[in-house]
Amino acid sequence: MDIIAEHFKEALLSSDEAAARGLMNESKQQYTSLQFVEKVLTRVLDQIGDGWEKGEYALSQVYMSGKICERLIESLPGEQRFARKDKPKMAIALLNDYHALGKRIVLSHLRSGGYIVTDYDRVDEKELVERACEDQVELLLVSVLMLSSALSLKEVIQQIRYQCPAVKVAVGGAPFRLDNGLWQGLGADFAGFSAADALRIASSFNGGKK
Amino acid sequence: MSNPVYMNSMLRVLTAMGHKEPDRVPLFLLLTMHGAKELGLTLKEYYSRAENVVEGQLRLYRKYGHDCLFGFFHAPVEIQAWGGEVVYYDQGAPNSGEPFIKKPGDITALEPPVIAESAHLREVLKTINLLYEESAGEVPVLGVAISPFSVPVMQMGFEQYLELMQFEPGLFEKLMQVNIDFCADWANAQLEAGATAITYFDPVSSPTIVPRELFLSKGFPVAVKTINRIKGPVATHLASGRALSIIDDLVKTKTGAIGVSAEEDLVELKKACRGRLTVIGNLNGLEMINWNRNQAELAVREAIDKAASGGGFILSDNHGEIPYQVSDEVLGAISNAVNKYGSYSKKEGT
Image 1 (cartoon, one colour):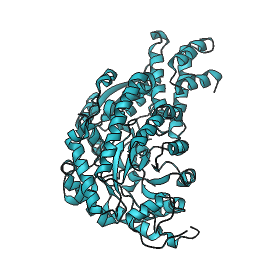
Image 2 (spheres, chains in turn red, yellow):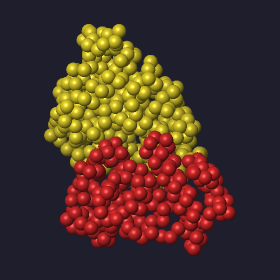
Image 3 (cartoon, chains in turn red, cyan):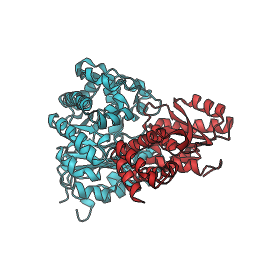
């Protein structure tokens, strides 16, 4: 990792948005904005997400890093922004729960990676199936906090398989981190154990099973 | 030194918490929902009357022969006292609904609820009091208070709270002061009702959620102030969050025990806590759902082998609440395995 990336990572981990912005501006001698996003910002976000999964960093750092990066990208002039990626066609939802932190983190990471993602916000099982099928999304990302919400995904996924089988479902949230095999038991196509996983799932998505 | 003499649950737990070896490893089955199954009630019906929870707890105690009675209903019962909403599920723990602090500015007018004025909290106190009477001093009755540093996740939502914590120091301090007053009052009311000890649920202080530096500047002083005001024994529980890197800090909060995560190794945790904090944990509650009897027995045996030596260990789950979906068969297998492998008199080198 180069020195700019190292300092950028430190700034994100310290929730120091001004320092992160300063580094992005300073890097213009070395990188175009697009290169900075690809070679520094996205990679650092990946490292922080992976670091959380390994117990090296805290959830608050993952959250603040994603928020800061999203704001940095939004502040770039339109022509300097990362090319928007509309493939795969993605939507993200929080199932039942009121606590949207996990969804928010994943959304920030995906948007920082240039992906266009439709946010369904908080939905129940019925609405989730209806909207995913109606929108013909290719990859549906579902975040849950409570175990009961995670378990209700089994029926959601069965309905999706029946009503709109082209939709692939990625799941994430605390219950899946604490029981690594839960997602398979529910019939999901993918599971994300950190925000970095969401980026990997999106970037390697080919419409088929992992 | 091993102690072959049979002990009741209270003596067993107190001996273990005194970092000595009791007759066998104490077992806390922290069952908040299985009582409803025992009584054939929905969870919402079950929590509506103290008598239901008391009967549920007593039946579970007799059924599994574990070592505590749990006076805890669910985390958002405190939110109800603040005027917030609780969402019930058919087969899962209730959760708080829409946060009642809509914007950070709402904090300036916040006052702690009066315990006696909350019908929901009164029901919990009644439960604890009835359990205390039933226990006749032979079984610990556990109360629960959510940490002032962690309860804002339910009060205002996780995102807003993380930003408040880092960027709004004045409002953060105001919120902590109000929450400390409430938490101390609530914990002390439970102790007065008969709780033997208070479980101080503080997941946000875990390094899983905030870095140690942020914990030291925010959650740690709150824990010190709050625990200092609680007039009885306190056990901190990080509700599945990691603890290892803050064990020395937790010792300084004057807590007596720590509920630990399945994500950390019991050998390392026990080594870090030995003689200072009792380790409570760390059977994986979510994996329990799919265990068979053999897997349950193996997990219990492994935990005991790793952490029981010298006392200072209570076998329990990692989260402080066993999922509704865990079967009676698995709970029975856990209990049987503790009796089979947890006897200190049979252990070598203890």
